[in-house]
Image (cartoon, rainbow, N blue to C red):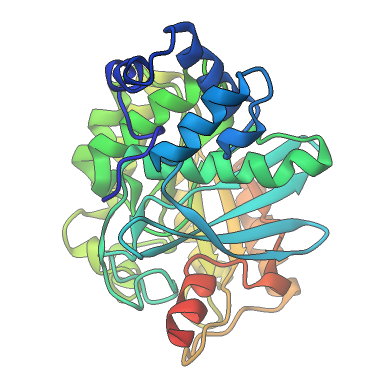
Length: 345
């Protein structure tokens, strides 16, 4: 993969600038433009001498090797696809809320997990993303937001891929996001997982008090195995135990993601069974009507049925919300934009 300024270590950046015959304080100036102002073009760095800006352009070393391939916008969201240095495609979504601007980040090109209701893995798994390719998504998002005079305030790792299957790069990315250079609070970061128990236990001990969000999607092992092949590796109770451990070690409440699929996992009986297993746990439940997929047969329940499911949980003193849907008009679900671009190729 091509080397860019973003992917360099601090020492490599210092050597890069020194080779141009420039003082070391120029490194900090460039980093300020890149990380705090999301400027992705050397020529826009107005506090650098014109001669240096031209030198930087002439080196052919980009600030970020990724390039913007497509952008779809709506009043509530902006979805964009990046082409990486090896021509792979990855996508991210900016979502606008009353509490701030949230970025949904991808951690892999494709996915290995094979969840039946998810588009991310339909094109197969290609490779893991590096930590700086994840950071690039944040920088491109902030670059797109410059015209709105806004910046990303929250990060959710719920895009393409399973973040904890790319554990080391994900943790490196998280540390970069909370570093003074970018400065997003760990309390504003959520990491999603389909329930990789050993990695959940490791993350609990990393000293990173981010929120963990577990894709459960069923009230028992039998139904979960129909929806998620990974269920054959880790039992339902193991996942719940790992969630309890995470809460104890980090002081952060764990969230359950539960996709409601008509006739599969959405009955009041299913809600009662789920409630019996998590009552008193402190977990938050996020209810998500399934997104229709090309070639898919699963349907979303009616709103009345969704609210009945929610009511059962609330009656058991479980905090349960129905996810606000954002980005449907721009193919907001994970993998949809990448797949459409790949089809055009």
